[in-house]
Amino acid sequence: MSRKIKLGAFVPGGGQHLAAWRHPESPENGSLDFEHYKQLAQTAERGLFDAYFLADGLAANFGGDIKVGLSDKAVGFEPVTLFSALSTVTKHIGFIATASTTYEEPYQLARKFASLDFLSDGRAGWNLVTTASNAAAQNFGRDQQLDHADRYERAQEFVDVVKKLWDSWEDDAFVRDKESGVYYDPSKVHAPNHKGKHFSVKGPLNVARVPQGYPVIVQAGQSEPGRELAASSAEVVFTAQQSLADAQEFYRDVKARLRKYGRSPDDLKIMPGVSPFVAKTEEEAREKYQLLNDLIHPDAGLALLTGLSGGEIDLAQFDLDAPFPEEAIPPTQGIVSRRAMMIDIARKHGFTIRQLYQWVAGARGHWTLIGTPSQIVDQLQEWFENEAADGFNILPPTSPAGLNDFVDLVIPELQRRGLFRTEYEGATLRENLGLKRPVNQYLLLRQAAQAS
Image 1 (cartoon, rainbow, N blue to C red):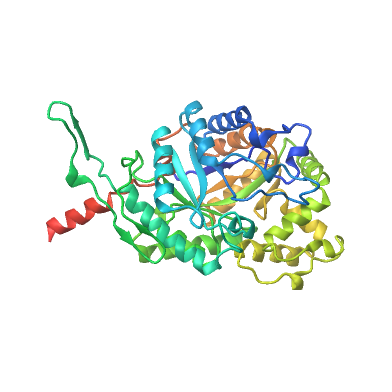
Image 2 (image 1 turned 30 degrees about the vertical axis):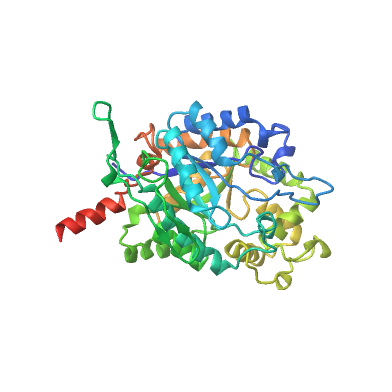
């Protein structure tokens, strides 16, 4: 079977664009409307998307002055809770929820995602993040966030512990013999008894081994520690590049790192984010793009850039129509890769502050495409066929209109060119992504001991 593009739908209830909630066709309360999310999930499933993806934060995201209230993104559902509900009104699409290795505990997270995998019959995924935010830190007993290197060190140990917990029970551990009264085989239960620098976890997990073995592990970091974590542990990488050359560099670098962890290139799917403004004519697509940018409140635009720059400078002190003050942006312990990309975009295009926030407002620095279905697919195909992507995480600028546009206009063009499925291949998210089901690590140890 020929290689096919994988697709995720990254669709927050209020839409991706900073001003999406102000669009005439957008619901005013989309971020807290379950029926709206239900419609989005079912539309994405109609479009045969692999997964519905949601980011998450651990602090209110005001997107501007708290006194003014400029953004709908200040509030929203916790994604695992939401996806548990959405799994009951869908059959095929996977659900990738974000959860933090910095502020959660391995046992709690392992249990939560194992439960989602059972509830969805094998359609769960965990987007592993390290949470770069002083606002989040202050909600969890800290004055400021952990240093970048410390967050990634903790994350690596965290994911190792979670995998041990997911392997607490072998697949055939449960006998459930009513006649003998034996419910499970004690020899097939494994307590991790983990003691490390950051965590001490005895176990075992109080959820059985899940349908997928592990929920699919997704990661989004692009810094050096982020790339290494992706190579060692991730099965999908959600990344952000603006050019074919940059995407190829990331793709080839991360894929090459897999070898030292005993992994093959097919064990990791790299899926850059794409924000598509699509219409039947290019002129209409550009009108959609301009309409949303005209709705951006300047204070919300400034707040977006401040967050991406690490939250350590107030850009309101500068003239909005002056060149972006690259020299005034200090190093950060926050989202290092996103800060660097923002500065690079401003430098390459000679953007003012206003032009930069309009550029990144739709997709927070991800690739923005504007055009007809054929024009959009031309560019996706170029990346897919030239070692830049295994698929894409689609960030529709508005919801539901932006997602409907992609499903109704772009998906048929992808299928016409033989680049995308016409039906789901498997029953689980892992199967549809073409990822192997992991073998229980304790079973492997026993088999190795028996063979020696």
